[in-house]
Image 1 (spheres, chains in turn orange, red, green, blue):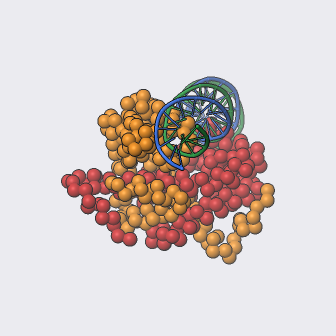
Image 2: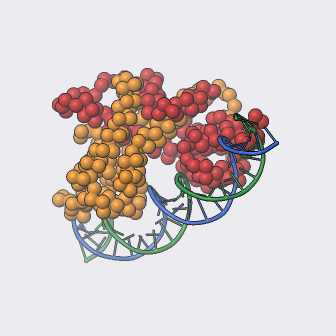
Image 3: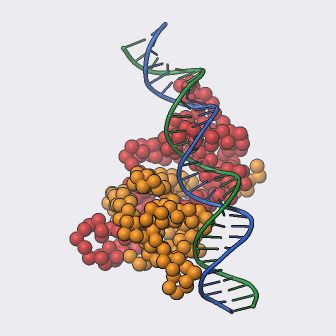
Length: 169
Length: 169
DNA sequence: AAGATGGGACAGCCATATTGACGTATCTTG
DNA sequence: CAAGATACGTCAATATGGCTGTCCCATCTT
């Protein structure tokens, strides 16, 4: 098992090693925080026979109505086939509908139906309860720091997409 | 950085609605941050024919040597059967070994082999590169806030487990 | 007119999770 | 000591959400 010598299992003077505890703490808190937050909506999804993949699509369609499929593909970073299955399910359940693009008629613009909006709002409520409680417990300066670190984890090529998402509410 | 002015942009009486933008921002940053961070190790795992589930086990075994299987099950919150398969793979690859518990001989205590330690350290390097860069860009006060918010997302019944994890490095 | 792009569909495969049932060794407790 | 609880393993079936590869059609661009 050939490994770069920079990999250290033993104590060393490297400033990177000095950060090990801080990095492990971040890794762990991200894991627990993310998985526990997503668990908050599992029950709501299961009631409709849907999974987390459906929620992710639903969420971003709610966020940017008239989103073309290609844009959603970039956000989710999954294949067209995987997304296709999810969108078919959501369409069959009457939660999402598509319209032909007015500018480019090849595009299909996604939006939630009235039922879809109600359902998404219901799921969002569960997320809001969890996150708002965490925000409140941590305080506003902490929330700002929380955002800033997470922004630093997003690769440069994805950053524009995330910012675009957040400018229009 | 100051509190986003968007908090006061949408006039309404509901304090919950006032937080919608902040909550959506948190949901999105958590999604992108978490998924992009985990992607940092996919290549390293694929070289050994392993997946993310294997890394999660490997990571927590590295973190707490001689961890009993029951403790790992609580951390990962998956079923015994799912974990069993992962541990079999890791054992077959010579990355993880078990010893019978000395206190309770029913237990099997998990630890990394020498190869396992090297491999985990190599994967950890990739995580460290990403997280340390984000920490550096955001600054130390932001890191503290990042931790505090994430801690607030962990349900009370899991908190002791996470803290136990972090007290021994 | 030719090629690029947006989207849909079919087929098969893989990784990771689930539930349920059953077995064995070991510890705890009345 | 017997009975029950606990820690772990295992067999079997199933669901979810990804993937690759291929082919197709409509539409836009050049």
